[in-house]
Every structure is written in structure tokens, then in C-alpha cells.
Amino acid sequence: MKHAFTSTAAGRGLNFGLSAGLGLGLSLSLGLLTTGAAQAQDSEAALLALAKAEPPLTVYDSTGKIKDMAESFAAKYGLEAVGQKVAATAQLEMVIREAQAGNVLGDVLLITDTPAALATLLPQGFVTSWLPEDLAADMPERYRNPLAITTNANLWAYNTEVYDACPVSNIWQLTEPEWHGKLAMTDPLVKSTYVDWFNQMATHDDAAVAAAYEAQYGKKLETSEASATAAWIAALAENGPLVTDGDDRVSEAVGAPGQAEPFFGLLSSAKFRDVADKGYKMAPCSDLTPWAGWTYTKLALIAAGSDSPNAAKLFVRYVLSAEGIAPQMADGKVPTRSSIKMPDDEPSGLIAYADKLQSYDSATGLDDYDRRQDWQDFWRIHYRK
Image (cartoon, rainbow, N blue to C red; front, side, top):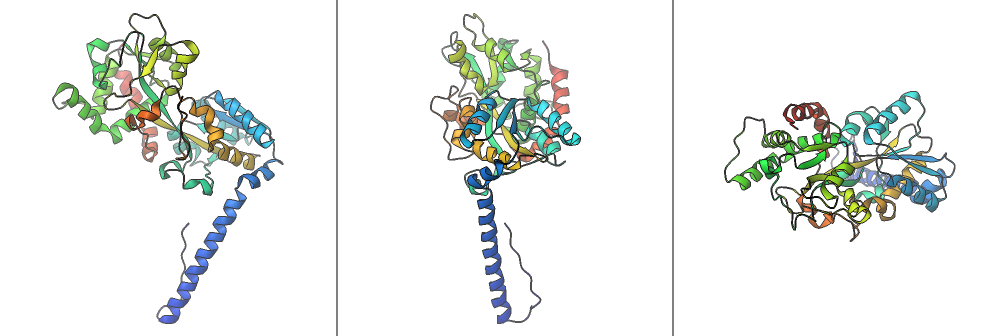
């Protein structure tokens, strides 16, 4: 909080300095009181007291785990809450439609489409971002506004039944004839986080892509494309990867047992639970150059027209706790609060190689949004089956 004061007593020497000092002290004192009052008003107890008089809460999220989270929240606080699995794209459409109709049904959005939220939902006032002041110090600043509750990861993966170790050491190898038609990934024309990833690479980490080329081939990259990233994406698309409508098919293509020639893959960290649940044979490539995978953020936003604003805030506090976010940590979703530790038995084990993941930077989220069509067109031009 910034504090300022003015005085018409300029030139009054010592008296001005004294009054200014008193003014500053009073301003700081009022600021501390205001901050303390805000924290008290937004405390768990205060929000719960107000939430008890509000209608049942509805929370949208793109994972089915939200149903369990909403039930646990309701049981903990004695409130009514429902979690609905809604894909990120559908969330955007529903929130805008509900707001325009004056009939808000979803009170809280847990949404992975950060660029779209930055470009449409927040500036048009459909949603608000709220972070409890008492939790802010425990969270890196880049995750505070808009509030990101987790970082989610997509990881490179291989079949452990056929390979003793990851058969790929550098992402440029995936553009070579040996891997023609043998990479499985979600279609970038279907899932926008993939083209956002393209833009993040080109914007923030193009030098790393170029360095990976030089490490693989012993010479500097020469390309007519606009960037090393564009050159890699073009070569990857031209090498005929299997593109799917989601991670389930990628997981099967990589990890299903009994394959003679399984696919190499790029998939959500959540799918490594298929090893235990479905008997799949796969593991992450934790030492790939330049990255073992890449991340994106999940935001927690409150619908501006919610009839349950205090219950919504209470739910946000809940998902910022270890108890509240636990079901998603089991899927490799890493909490943005520094004090919350990942479980040791998380299937992908990504916390051990977190420094090998390309990190999403929301500072250029609007540019990611603006460039989506360009990158989709680029992929469409170069893709070969």
C-alpha cells in the first residue's frame, strides 16, 4: 500500500518537517490499521460467518478432482458446494454468457487458460482476482495478480517396457527420420496451451532452443525461419507426429504394455498415475535438453456477479492450503505457495527435476493470446502425417 501526504506549509522550516513527520506517522498508522482490518474481514472465521447466509457455491475446474475438493470444502465448513468439471474453453464461454445474461451460476473458476483470462475475463470485469493479504508473503509475486494457485506441467515420456532409459536426449532428435511418426502429443489446434508454449519459447527461451541445436549437431543453427523455436516447431510438425484430442490417447500410445514400437510422448504430469491405475509402462525423461517439459498456470478467479462472494473467497483460501489443493498435487500440480510441499509419492516425481522444466511467464500472457492464431497457422502449414 502506498502512502502520500501534501502540505501548503512549504518554506516553514522546522515546523514543516515536524508536521510532515507527524503526517507520515499518522498515514502509516492508518495504513496499518486498514491492512489489519482488511485481514480480519477476510479471515477464515469472518468469511465463514458471512458465507453461511449465502446460496450454495459452484466451482468450475477442468479436472474431475474438483468434485472431491468441493465435497471436502463443504464438509469442513458446513456449507453447500458443488464442483463441476468444465474444460477451460467452455469455462470462458459459460462465464461470459452467464455474466451477460445476469445469471451467474459458476462462482469460482479454476482455469488453466491464463492468456484468455488476461485478455477477456479480467479487463471486461467478468471476474475478479483475490488473494488474502496474510498469504501474499508466502507466494512469489508473479503468481499474485492474477492469482495462480498451481503450476501444471506437460512432460516428455517414454515406454519403460521397451527402453531401459529415455531414448531421446535432445528435443532436436525428434525432428530426425528415426522419430518420424513416432511422437504422440495433443494437437496444438485443439489445446491452446500448446501454442502458448510455442510463443513462450520464442519470446523468452529462443536462445536455449538454438543452444540445444548446437549441442546436438556441433554447429550453429542456420534457418530462414524467424527464430530457432519456429525452426524446431516446423521440423517437428514435418516429422509426422501423432496428434490426438487429449492426453489419454497420448498416455496409451506411450505406455500401454505389450508394444514392440511404442510412441515417445508429451503429456500431462497427471497421466503418470496411469502407471499404477492401468498398468502402463512409462516414465518421464527427466534430463532432456533443454527441458524435460514445460509449465503453465492455473488461476483462481471469482465471478463478479456471484451471489456467494464470501463463500467464494473462503474457497480460494481453501485451495491455497495444503489440505485444499492436495487432490491436485497428487496429479503433479505444484502449489504456488512456497510453504506447501509436494507429496513424496507423486507419480511423475517432477519436483526432483523442477529446474529442468520451462517455466511459464504470465508477463507476456497477452502476447501469447494475440499470437495464438499465428502459431496455429504455422503448425497447420508445416504439419505432415
